Length: 198
Image (cartoon, rainbow, N blue to C red; front, side, top):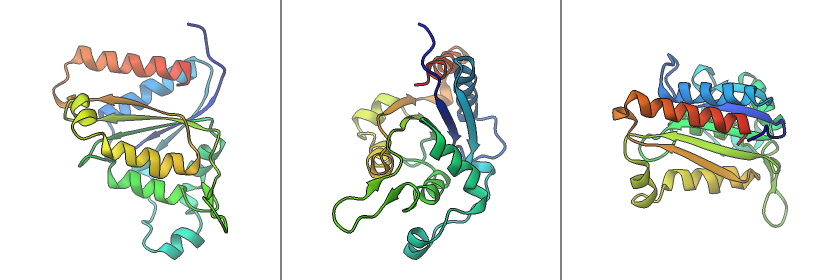
């Protein structure tokens, strides 16, 4: 396959461990390296390295501003054509740190705007996304038995709500027992997705 049209891509690595060396970090690296090879403009965000406050009140959410420590991250998201969000599945959904980050950057006035009547205006329309999720259970079990409930909520109630679509998924299951050959295939898959800007 030939190269795709160059895109502005932001890769958001959401594993909460700031020490790195997790599969999520390797998947983020693989995607970013592939995207750079494909001629795309890539920016990286490591959520675990950002010291930002938790939102605690509706007033802060609706009337406050994005903390200065997240201004660069917000600008990367705002200017991106494609958003890649990578995280491990914890208790069936994203880790709390990822949710806290999304609450900060998906504020009214930034990611959406309230209207006097009708649904809010989606201020991040025109951007696509890929969710990359690692998990201990088989990915098929998460999809079929649990209906991928954590991802459905993230997609419908956050990403679609602010206008991000389409949203594609890459789920990697049984990561704790995966042999080196399988991990290598996962990294190759991420590199190719990055090269194609998907």
